[in-house]
Amino acid sequence: MNPQLTRRRFIKGVIFSGAAASTGAGVYLAANAQPGSGGAERLITLNINGRNRPVDVMPSETLAYTLRYKLDLTGTKIGCNRGECGACSVLINGVPNYSCSVLTHNVKGKAVTSIEGIKGSDGSLHPIQAAFVTENAPQCGFCTPGQVISAVALLNNNPRPTKAEAARAMSGNLCRCGAYEHYINGVLRASGQIA
Amino acid sequence: MPSHDVMPNMELFQPTQVEDALSLADRFAERGWLVGGGQDTYGWLKDRTKTTEALIDLSAISSLRGIKETEDGLEIGALTTLSEIGGDLKIQRSYSLLSKAAEVVASPQIRNIGTIGGNISQDVRCWYYRRGLSCYRAGGNLCYADTPEGMNREHALFETSRCVAASASDTAPALVALNATMVIKSTQGERMLSAEDYFVGPSIDIQNTTALRPGEVLTAVRLPTDWANASFYYEKVSDRNVWDFSLVNVAAAFKLDNEIIQDSRIVCGAVQCTPRRIVNVENAIRGQVKSQKTADLVSDSATAGAKALAHNGFKVPLMRNLVKRAIAA
Image (cartoon, rainbow over all chains, first blue to last red; front, top):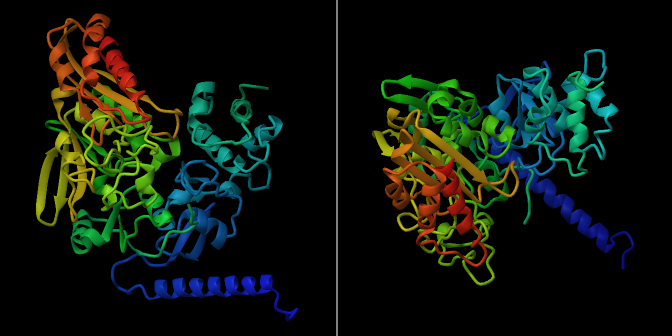
């Protein structure tokens, strides 16, 4: 048997060429989507974390996909990709949303804040982030960006939430490590109710 | 089941005027897909269980958004989000039944984008159907849920006809209890349907949950004044308090005169494909005192005619007790 072409290499090669062919087909179809049919333009400018970012967006693309794979903002995590976990939460005009379940074309003209836009301009941690660190809230850390987003949105609207209000506001974010109490204590700490 | 990060390619239209949306809906008819918040839609498309040529995104049409007072009650644009409905003072003041229902849907983030139009027009949540099996609802000739081995814990108790899927909406029973009117537009004009007629079961149309036809757009929900400021009760029971669909929910409105029930509308969700009005109980309690005693007397009849499947028998006492609580509260 030719040592240069093992079975594994052969399969890898087939997979790679298949992937390349299908990606190419996708781009081709999209580029040919009848111009002037009234459909959404692909070249759009998004307002992400206060900056205008021009980007080429497919009609069916979700915001989570655009942030991670087109704009390299990988702090936003894709957990379930179904709006059932909260890891991909971002702020759209200050309101928390699951970026896996929003079309990127829906946020044209809106201000998107991802986890990268939460820290201070000097790079310092947001009070929520600092409080979460103090409370040991991030365990594996995968849900943390989404938890920070939900907590920031809550404190922007309600600077001194009760524990029940905090639990309700954070209820759309799962934590499989089970650090819910830590996150809620973090919200109470950041709002000055725990020292 | 394979999960895909991206949805298949399709055309996307984002009209900003209702007229443009209507002509797109007319042009594409069955080949198009109307989307509001998309929280039901994207799952179908990501799974490749259903596909569409053209997504007609209604969310940029500002005239379909918001809550306004009219001569006869309130008009809620179909694209108004559930968070907006839950937080609206006009609705809280006179129709708190709907506020409560809107506040228990799914999770905060989903309520921030999910719309009232989408919540009441969403498809059923039978996992066999959503998995893409060729069941009755999908145009096939088999039900996978109602078999000796089928998992049907969350399925229907009443009015099943080949399909045993249950309604998934938390706000639909509240709108039926409030006797809401649905405003439906198409290029042909406008028609109104009562909430009760808007929802259709499998014996009438097995492939749709609403009376909306291709080319039609639900533009608004009107709440008439006849049930404004009634005495309301809403309760949802689900496995988790967040995300999960109702196992059973109850939305009830009572017109009282000195604790005597003059009239009532009691509606349960998730027990059949449409919200179920419990008319025999409504009739039985007319003229009675709204009390625990009345509730105890009539609650058995709330589930008359229920036919449990292999795994959803628990819904029968659950439903009976929710109706009891609604009357006793």
